[in-house]
Amino acid sequence: MQTKFMSSGGALCRAGTIIFTFLLAACDINGDDNLPAVPDLGLFMFVEADHHETEDTAQISAAVFRDGQPVNLVGGDVFEARTATERILLKVRGEFDGSYASSLPVDTSVQDVFINVVHEPVEAREDRWYPIDLLNIDPGPGELVGKSATVNFPPAVTITGPATDTVYTTIDENIDLTWVAGGEGDTMRVLSAVECKDGLATSSYGTEVDIAADDGLETIGMDKFIYDQNDDSPAVNFISDAALVLLQELLNKLSAGNIDPDFLVKQAEANPVESACEIRLFLQRRRDGQFDVTFDSGQVIGSRSAEVVVNYLPPVQSN
Image 1 (tube, rainbow, N blue to C red):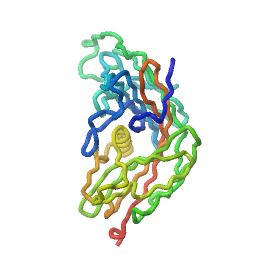
Image 2 (image 1 turned 180 degrees about the horizontal axis):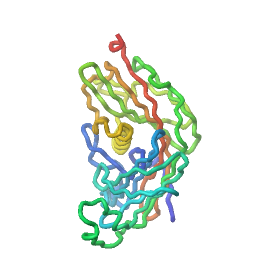
Image 3 (image 1 turned 90 degrees about the vertical axis):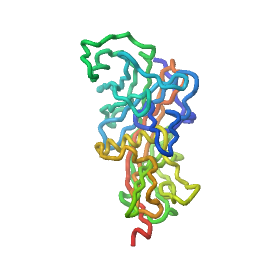
Image 4 (image 1 turned 135 degrees about the vertical axis):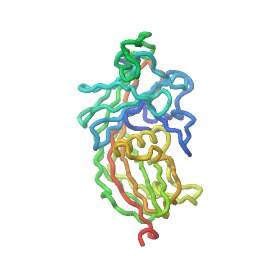
């Protein structure tokens, strides 16, 4: 298989969990496009895979775009994700038109996941409501069959600080985030899920912070996670696009489905700066993969993540 190597400097939205693209359209989130930088011309693939530290599976999603529009797989065509020992078909619809999702069993020893479009007319339809032996009219393989990508996982993430449940009392404080450094070649970012309560109301939202280097230390201001609703120019970068979907899916998996499906969509009822807030920090290490040379462009990313929880408790809440 011929491959093209990916550049992390491409003008694409950030993501993570095997995701060949997701986007959740919601309040205050730009949902006009599945990905803001999908080119208007050509065949494009976007892939990302995130394996979280406590999970024995990686979330998988997939999509292909032609001339800026998602391509639906029809007939017996389906995305396949496999390792040396495991294989799944991505038969469940993802969060936007044209995407497909599933979970693939993996552990920290798994380095690569291979994604292919295959033609499986029986397996691809076996979960449908009609009897497959009666309505298995197979038009044959489509034009995407045989196209592929390879996701490369980076080393696992090990967070060493701050301690779980560390308390911060003002947005002027800093979080000294430390981890076991991985060296050059991979990129790092923090996704956060924040829930704030003032005794009467609740706010929940997500933020995203890029990290300069995988050197084991990043000092991040609390104002990157907690903001004042009265501030017209807050320092927070609210999570959006594929990263939002990735984190929402991970939260759903970690909670066994017991989390609001719109948890991250800026439900601003309590003013965070005046509220008691739980901040779940997800540190991701990300690595570029490869896509088939028959695609005109694309982005393929494998990632691993770990979590630490800290708390924000302003003086008015601590009295």
